[in-house]
Length: 363
Image 1 (cartoon, one colour):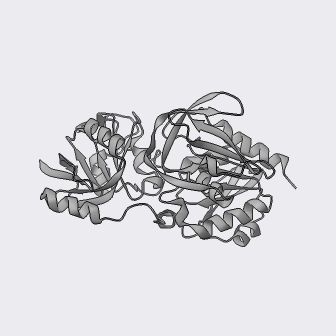
Image 2: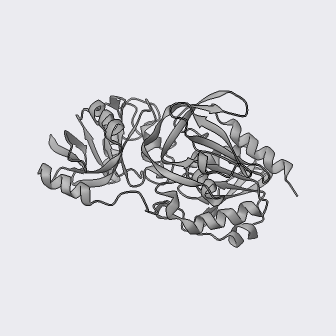
Image 3: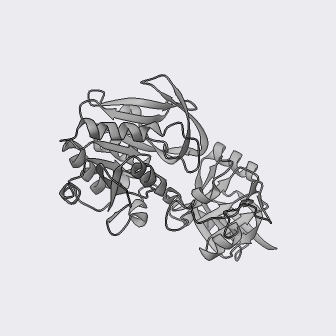
């Protein structure tokens, strides 16, 4: 058994064992309350730069398969759990969680009191962290955590965006959708393709002219990691595309970028929303959705111009912004993840609304 120490920038430390890999891992320590979906969580690019604590006590029991990955590799900087399952049992499993983490050089630590970790983050906020199996000096590790880069002001989105544009395979596409990749999950592309919307995925460095040259019927802006205020050129591109009249749908980071593009402000949340059980109220219908979420930044809904933008959804736990819509342009967005993976499917209707928006504004 290899001892591992987890040190936070506020001086708090936790002890565990490395069940996968060794060395040191740096990132912002956050927690996710999902009961399943550890594979999708690890491969979500929105976790780039973060170490994930899972609150469910037993992780790895159904292994890893080739179908449920949400990007080309896992992006979490590290994984902290209570107990790593010694056995995997699922007919689709091709490898174990331990083998998967070690293949991708990600440090996995278990035998940790994850309840204590979660309660600490809820009380003190998400914070910079270092995990180490090689340096077990607590004071030295705390200093390393203090000196590690945080998320505010960092453009992490560009580090996970595709370098080159590509077409997602679609049969009998009725619409062409330009997808701005800020750290996209594959299930978003799948759900567009299933509805006859053929995605062409662009780097977040693409210009408005590059996107419009493809003559898309709509614009989709993906989720992604980091501080939305750190990508002003992407915000400028998005504003130009929406002002062109292109029907637009944004998710998570895309929601934040749209808020900024139209004069709003964003802020870093204390510990964010991460899990597959977040209640959201649709203010237009009065219905409640149980949603999958993963974000640490938020649109300040009070900063939005009420003559231009309408808040359409709010989080029932804390009243924060979960959706907005432009009052004259064909544009809407949500902070949560209607594509789930993992999570409930309550909000899948939003993809249908995007299809209808393109149909309504088709030239």
